[in-house]
Length: 74
Image (cartoon, rainbow, N blue to C red; front, side, top):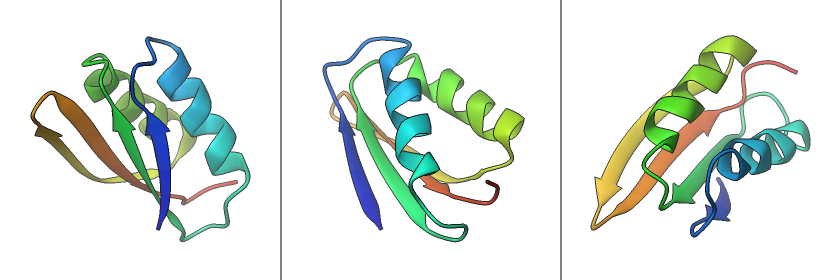
């Protein structure tokens, strides 16, 4: 699993950083994104649906939002 630290970044940067990281990954790999902007809880799942990636898990721990994505498309 690859980790992406997008904490302290505001929209749209967490989505852009996620997109750029996924472009470097192979199908089937997983990415764990850590964010502090609550907007990612809507933005990243929508981005995954549009781009064909699988959102495996979302969680909030003490103001930090963690999303796990499986790369499912190129």
